[in-house]
Image (cartoon, rainbow, N blue to C red):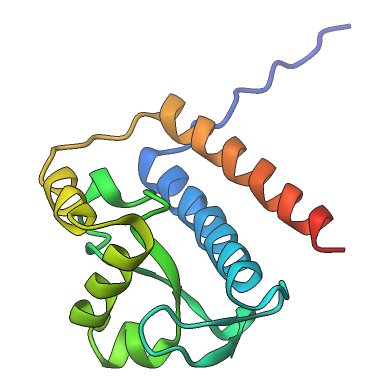
Length: 145
């Protein structure tokens, strides 16, 4: 009896990057809800302070997500309300102030410098990030119960 060998589907870097972003976004929103309110389902927008449900919130970038080097940097991404993230262009001045408050004077400039570095994600790096975010999400989920 012959067994058919299945070819493993190769996932593209682009699709894997999208999947990692979904997990990163989920983690960031959970993390910031817990950090700002102690409740995994509700949090405060980093830029306007609005109280918002996690499922309605965004994971907004200080440095645009078009910069690969800071795309998944957890210090560059925080819970943001849709108003600030989409309709107010991310509120960059308010966001900068919060980055400095959270991480110290000059950290905003460090993120800007990091963003200028060229970064080409590999499948191996993205798979590792995917697993890391899954573990972090699981840890937050179990610690919040």
